[in-house]
Image (cartoon, rainbow, N blue to C red):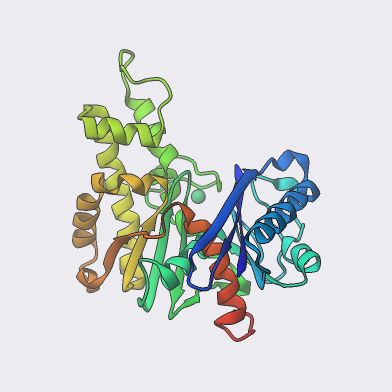
Length: 313
Ligand SMILES: [Zn+2]
């Protein structure tokens, strides 16, 4: 039984996940980064111990998926924008010491990619790219069941490939990255820049709300959804051209509204990807649902220690 820890900007979720990727139980608490890393570590330990005791199981290992950047080999947090003061802290070493089990950590998009590849929509796909579209755009590449890593173990930042160099400023410092064009907040910014003074839905706009309005037939929201579909399609078409993968699995909160976007995405891929057999790339929705990140965290452990026979993968 693997203890799974999903560390996000707003919440930390903990659960027990069996060897088939089923979540037996879960719990969560606010990340509350301001209270400090040591205090968060105490909460994670408490949640893991409570859940293991209530289920009458012993943890055989712990897997962590975290908002990044994180170093999968040293186990340290990098310069994470949600908790900059935690930089250099090492939950892998700390949880290994506390629980006397092997612990592994990956970026949360990589973790979810591993889970979809092993237990979800990407099962049996040799070349899989998982893309999550929410407040940002993250992605993980899994080749033959193994996570693709860049130089020095780097996580490729697919959300920051440039779609339109004259586009809006991205948090990375450049303009027109895919994330700045097509993540949820980009939909909101675009609609807010276009809405007239008397637009009736000015308050509390979110990507989710815009998608609801688009489904209800609101003209401006439909334009925002069409624009979203176009930019999602351009980024995905780039991935198809660059990788010619067997499958692209789409997850994240914005993808809950995928029916609004899929037709245009497919059309864009068809227009853009003529030099690769794009029609053979499955474009599919993530299948692990709300617990994808937690299941992914558990899969991180299997990927590192079980599947790889103990070798650092
Ligand atoms: Zn960027």
